[in-house]
Length: 526
Image (cartoon, rainbow, N blue to C red; front, side):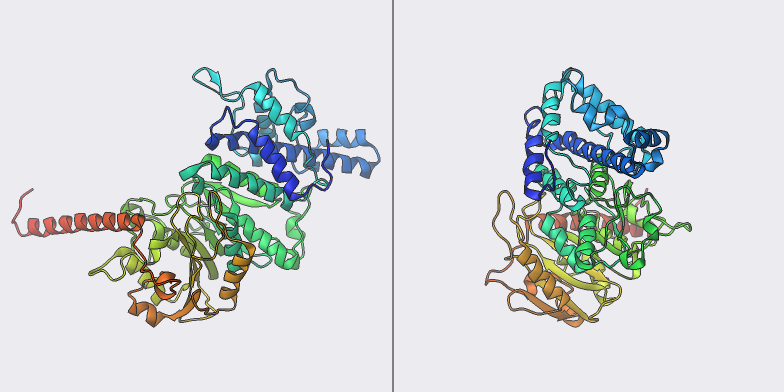
């Protein structure tokens, strides 16, 4: 086996070669479930071997070190049982390999409760209609490809391995269609959001719809890049991180994810990046997991998210909840976008800031209409309370679950530029890609600079006052204020559908109210 100082390109091509070994027998949406836990297991096993070796050098006796670890599992970060170690699995024949791999990941989970529901989510011996989903032969080929390189402490840096792991997530997303957006946000979108949020040492960051954890990880990497915050060794025991000097305090990472498989991916992703993250499983809108002892929502310095756009939640979810979240208004049942915004703002510390990816229509729907509109009214409340900092319009065909452009909206409870909102039309800042368009580092740097320097640039950005936003009926779509051509923007089909559903919802509410009045007047009977 080779593997000294693995670079990112070598890792990416190697891991993709491994993934391709099971592309035939497994549908695209599923093969990530088979390869990601094995990469994670290999990393854990190689690091375990390195830690035991390090103890052997310390005690000048490898056998003594092994005996000590077997007697006291707390000497290593994660104890790997003998039949779950990569050195054992790699030499097994194809016969019964699926059962052996399943036993291995379950044994690791039993020995390390923090990995329960993370590494043991896949049954490598599973069948459908009486046939094995992945044959032992295919699994053997996969293991042998993964056996080409080590993933230990001295073979690859956590951030390099993490980038390769995220590369795999992107490749899986490319083949997964509509469901891809549920677990993956385009990498450079996450980088842009992290540069906007600008995390500092010791801060807390929270993602209530964290998917595979990409946005949280980008914040961690931005902190490391800017401050050079050292990441403690994987052998560091719990509690030792707190002993680090405050100038070297890592970001404190928190997230919640509703899908069990995606939850497992996020946990693996943070472990691979050597980040101590607290990720909870559950439905954030119905049962937020991060609460205080008095039952109120816990608050964080930074909040970031890319929730599913225009989710359909019943309005009684907002009306009958135990937390003070939806104080700016009840969102329509046709779109939960402003429900997510309000949850995130309620989870934000008094001087905190947040960045959220939403459907483009979330910042314009309802403006200019006669009468009330729930989304417009909530938007108005945030504008008038001067908590909206900036809106960035993204290019088309950037996200994996839609070809429509999205927006990044930044809200701030302690604005540096009160009374102003920065609107950035970045719709033309991309390179054509297959299957998706992409931001480059130059694009991200340019957009982040506009925000950090609070600059207006012709045909790209404009600074508007709260009064100007009010004159435009609280329409915050950057394309309304910053034109890149002479074409009049067309209402996207998705927005038209949401508006139609909202109008139908309002009609039903009006019918109920009218029936109640007529009943009270005795004009209709029960």
